Length: 351
Image (cartoon, rainbow, N blue to C red):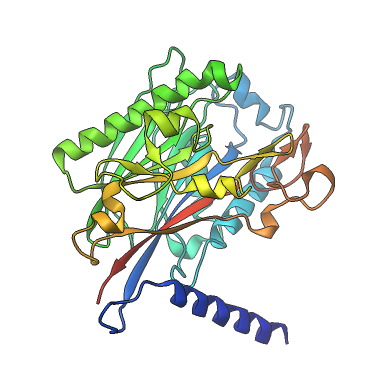
């Protein structure tokens, strides 16, 4: 009975997805290819070896968190399970690309992609060691069946103290060239207002990277993703990056941020003192919007979602409904992350 119910639910989901697909004006049955592009803050994915001093000691068997192999491998499999669940009727193999943050090194990323829940997808890893004082980096997982890597550049953010570099990964998706800039902008340590200038500098660097890409190839689509430590309406995103809340009128080399309305509905990716924020954003350039595309066969933005699956949420007390994190107040919860993953979908007409 349970199996029959699951089949019915899957069929209804497929019908709903098909109903949302854009129709051809001539009434002919169009065929589309859809690519998922996701971002996930993995919340302190450290190995168990103290390799870089005081902060790393915390994530070791002798540290305050008693971070041993049992906890590490549980965390790896939890995160892999979350990524495994990122499937839809139009993306049954999961996202083509997943940007990640709060990773210690390439080794933990390799362990993640080899974990049983997602091993069959054969994700490949892009990583770069940043000078961040906490020892965390950004990275990218990509499925080579859907994303063909072209090149990678890393860009230093100069704000007076060491922080995460911005990683720009260029590749081919559906025959179109796209650049994915993966970010983890400086935190709100010291207060949101006092620290805003650091995130504004990060936004300016993103814009500079995009302008440099367009100076070489005006047609390249640019996707800015990451834990921005700001919401869509904050100055870094809304003013410096000028990422608009509506796609109408966005210039080809401008930006559209679809997450404004999501946060307005009370949906976020992390919560603090009972209030939701949506720091985990995926922002698209104007030339990835349908109205700016010369042909339906070109890749363009379709829709977006917060992947706030029920199993990623706490189910008791003050944690109910919020992301089920790995630790809380020093207690190991055996959770996933303190952030929900986000995803956008790019669509391309193939017939």
